[in-house]
Each structure stands twice: as C-alpha cells, then as structure tokens.
Image 1: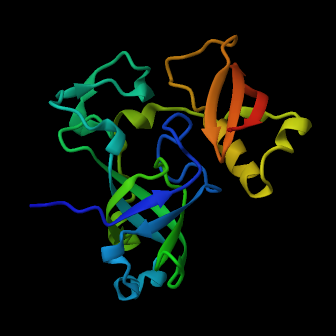
Image 2: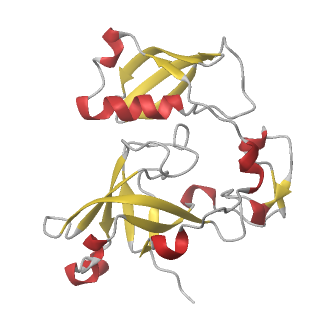
Length: 226
C-alpha cells in the first residue's frame, strides 16, 4: 500500500527545539495546512466546519532511519530510563508516523493555494508532511477515567517567564502570548538543569535566548534571524 502526502503544515517552528512536547499545550500557536495540488478540492472539506478538533496523521520526516529499537528513552523520564516503544509517542519507531489532536480554527475555501485549514495547538515543525486528516469525535474519543501510563506521575508546572520590555517589543504582537506559552512549558530536555547555560530556540523568524534557574525562565536576548 502506497502512502501519499496530502498536505504540509506551515507554522513558526523552523526546527524541532522549542516545539511543545504534545499538542494542545499552547493554545496561541497557529498553523496553516496547505494541500498538495492533487488534493486542493473544496468538496473534500465539505462538513468539516461542524467539528471543533481534528486528528492529524503525519510523517516524522526528520526522523527517517534504517532499523528500529524495541525500547526508547523518553525525555519525559529524564532520558535515562528505557521503556517499550509502543508505550511511548517517540518519533523513533518502525513507521515514523505521528498523531496530533489540534483545534480547528478556520477553513478558507478559496485562495491562491486552494482550500486551506487553520489549526491551533499543533506540535509539528514547519513543513511537516500530513498523511491524513480525521475529525475528532468526542462521544467516543473522550474517555472518562482513562490512564496515562508513566505520564500520570508527572507533576509538571509552568515556569515563570520573564522577558524584559525592550525584548518583548521585538516580538510581533500576534506572537507574544504564544512565545510566552512555549517558554512556560520549558523547551529544555528534562535531563538538562544547568542554571548557567544559555539555551536558544527559533520561533517566528526570531532567535530567542534564555536561561532557566529553578522555576524561573529569563529571556536574555531576542534577535531577528537573518
């Protein structure tokens, strides 16, 4: 069976570092799904406006590799504990396929790129290939009392984000809250905890530098990417 790329998503993440670990964690994030020419058919979206959320099935295009391992080291567990690949959402799997639940923000049926879909909360990198789109059905897919495996023990709390006024002014108005939300989720790997280290991430055409000390993340520099 041949799998076809039906679309790509475009957003403010040119690289993996800084992307939220799961979808829906940062509501202010928006992306645009642009279909491949073969699938730019408005009729294929008929009725989609009746749903609030969508499942995106996508290709971990930056993680293609030969072979696979039955166990992986989730960053969620500090990167030093192995767990079965089927018990994780790790990108390192026999078939590098991702699944993300996103909010449907809008549908534009006409334009130079044909019908496009605007989504919120996606945890995908800019340009990620989309393999399929399916509506989220709350009456069967919202399960009361469901268990979350090793993630149930996580007591993650948002970091306090400090951005000096002269730096936040460099961020486009519509991106400020999204940037703060991303940083509050702590983009660092769980196993890194060096208060002296300066981390950097790319977002919305900006190079953002920051440090983390305890539960305080402080932005120390923001520059436009040339």
